[in-house]
Amino acid sequence: VTKILPFGVFVRIEDREDGFEGLVHTSELDDPTGDAASIEVGDTLTVKIIDVDLARRRTALSQVQAAATDA
Image (cartoon, rainbow, N blue to C red; front, top):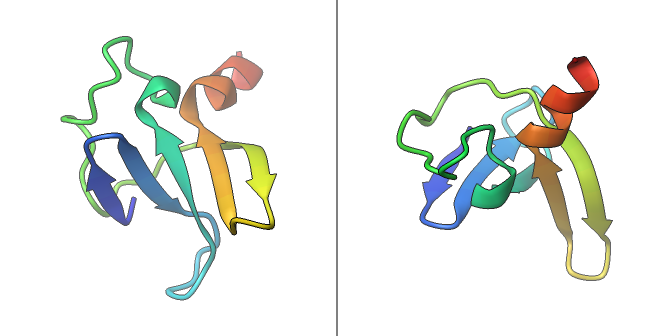
């Protein structure tokens, strides 16, 4: 986790300082309330890439969907 904002958290996808980042929207956090209060910068999350928008240079991630595929 690189940054926490009211609408979600940014997660570095690659294990490099200059690696790609994506957004896990609050609705995709593995918490029914969508609360990121228990998440801190530096935490490691298991996420799934759910959308890549090349034109806008955005990557959408999901912690919920990643947990569902692990079950």
